Image 1 (tube, rainbow, N blue to C red):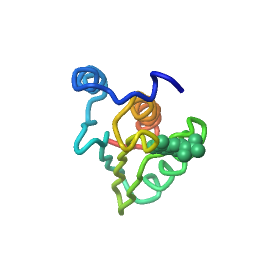
Image 2 (spheres, protein in one colour; image 1 turned 135 degrees about the horizontal axis):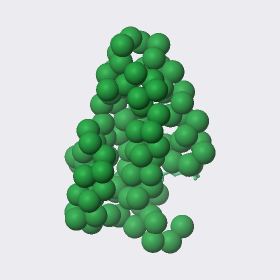
Image 3 (cartoon, helix red, strand yellow; image 1 turned 90 degrees about the vertical axis):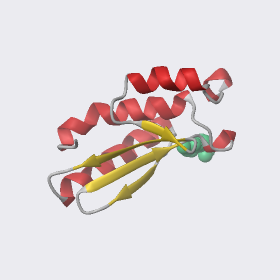
Image 4 (cartoon, helix red, strand yellow; image 1 turned 60 degrees about the vertical axis):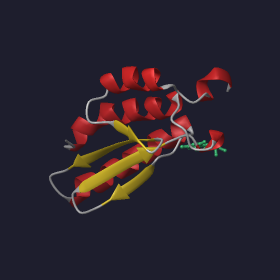
Length: 103
Ligand SMILES: C[C@H](O)[C@H](O)[C@H]1CNC2=NC(N)=NC(=O)C2=N1
């Protein structure tokens, strides 16, 4: 996979985060929490994210609550650092969030 799976530096992370409001990096994990109008829309978004994750072969930890969903991801194959793969997944999730009533 080459340079794509290099851990990102601090400046590269800041640049990418600037394009992704609501997302942050803590403890080497890229994460965001979403709120929903109820439980089913949150659960449906989990399934939609799962499809994207299979397409990208990159998988986040998804924590589903009643009307909340937390997404946290890093790249396991390089020992749990934030890479461009994590940002690719985050951008794909952002693209679908609005349609699920997530905010
Ligand atoms: C075999 C398969 O391609 C790997 O295990 C993939 C699957 N999903 C993954 N997801 C994440 N977040 N990091 C990985 O390194 C990773 N590796």
